[in-house]
Image (cartoon, rainbow, N blue to C red; front, top):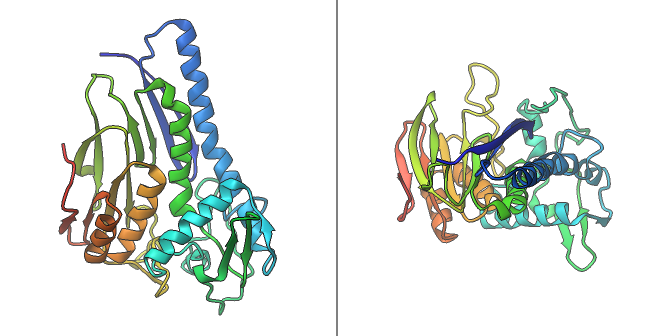
Length: 306
């Protein structure tokens, strides 16, 4: 059994842990691993700084103040939004990065990292959608044609995991866990595949399933993560087409080659519910399972399990 080097930070409103197997190497190799993990973790803070809807200084927030203007964007923000819009188009707007204002209306206006509350000044009668965003690939500019509050929460954590995984690729055997959104590579400390547990959506100290995987991402969206006011069914995942909390699912887990795909499709499948959600995953050739609030299990035709 090999030793592991483990580091944990608080980022993106959750706990991020990186584990690199093989820390029993020589001193130079250990130093290289530690430096690589530090670089990998920096991606979580860097992407947050650019894409947070709570930080008025972030690139995402500054974009939202320039309605009707073709705003030059960083590659990171441009490609993140482009990916989110592709998922929005595929789900006919059930998944939509312009959902930020609806989240604010439901009380989800607090940064879980800092505790700072931020409300936009967007007219409450405004109902922007993904169709109100224009991307120009040639100039790499973004134009918002109407006021909106952008939220890339279902994309940027996966993006940060993928960026971290690229930093760690030379080490071959590692795991990245960002609040249950996970990427694993190579082998665990025992030399076998990684075992990834899926949290029971109604029992926080239990698993409802587990997966034996490697060189892949496993991301879960659940109704238990951020709840609304006590006595309501509200949570932070909203069907942008209706403006209502998505109530057909308790959790949705997706296994995909990259975390950005697994993260976004888990949210999209959760919103769509078991029938449409599983169809979405199978259409994209990824594996996954959805649990309903009554814990009925729905899964793709092919599914990895331990």
